[in-house]
Length: 280
Image (cartoon, rainbow, N blue to C red; front, side):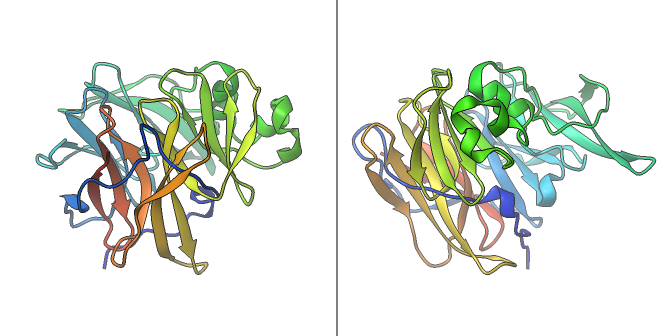
């Protein structure tokens, strides 16, 4: 049976609801990609026409059409699917490939043609904890450039010094960042470093285009495998939360909102395939 290993840092905390009114499911979950290998961490292309996914341990990058057809591999590199991102024109995908030289683990940024898989190295292999393409500004830039020291380097996060900031998500308008602190839950902060506040328990926040609604998951595990999860939404302005998906047979993880805000793609840890659910 296909299984995803338990990544402790991929989890963490949160809490609350949606956006335009109160985000809720507008359809049953629909299997988008049925694969013989375990797939995870979907990322929509900016134009909404394609979706990229990765395999266990973030190995490789695979691309499919938005309807799930045409799945093909564009990279087999180890670790390259972690925080991969699309170019603005939806033609290429960038990620860090991991390699070992003389016992040292190095990472090199590479950009892949989403259609052919042709790769271009965009940076030399170095020892780094940064996310690919981490040239962002503000608090988000600090979080992506060095997650392990971000809390110590952001005044508002001094209470979390020594902990790694994980899964930072920048709102579409660039003004707000949702993120996790392991063992401390999910948080919201303005990108200028002001306005820190707790969102409660949750993991992998993903913004809707309205710049105020997040979808996220509340996940349970037994120390070895994921045992349950609920797909939630929260209105960050009011703190209101809603359940989008919570049922047997589904353990939703790493949600990704489509560019038009109408769908959420997620990996189902119960069968390691990719699903979507329409939202309203």
